[in-house]
Image (cartoon, rainbow, N blue to C red; front, side, top):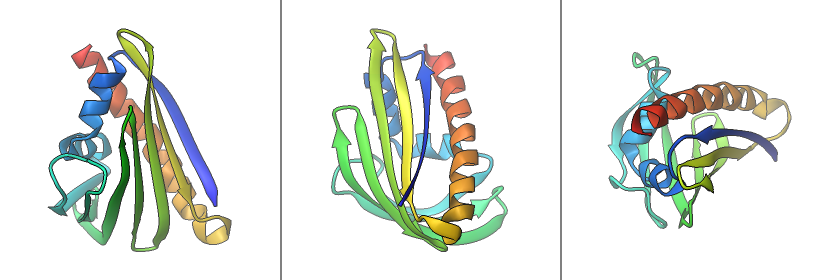
Amino acid sequence: MAVVRRSSVLPIPASVAFELAQKVELFEHVVAPWLRIRGVRMPERIEAGASGSARLWWLGALPSWRHHLAVVHAGDGEIRTNEHGGPVRTWNHHLRFEPLDASSCRYTDEIELEDGLRGLPTRLFARLMFRHRHRRWRALARLLG
C-alpha cells in the first residue's frame, strides 16, 4: 500500500475542527468545486459504525462513480474510514486534529491506497485534492478563528 499525507496548521481549536469534520456538509465544502457529491446516503454526522455512499460529480457537471464509505473510528480528534468506488479499490482515510495550543491545531490527512501503476493516478489525485482541501480548511478556519 502507498500512503499520501498532508498536514496544515488551523487557527481554531482541535475540538472545533474535529466537530466540523464530523459533518457531511464540511466535506462537501472542502472538496468543492472540483467534486460535488449527490445522492448522499449517509448519516448527517460522521460517527463510528456509520456507512454510506454518494455519487461523485467532477466539476459539479460530469457524473462519475458511486463512492462508498464506512467509518471505522471517530473519536479523540481522529476519524478513520475505509472507502472504495469506481477505479479506487482501496482508500483508507485517516484524519487527525492535534491541539497545538488553546486556539490552534495540526490537521493531518492521510490516505492509504493501492500501490503500483494502477494506484498512480489515484495517488496523484489524492495529492492534488489534499492541497485543495487544506487550502479550503485553512480559509474556513480563518473565518471562524
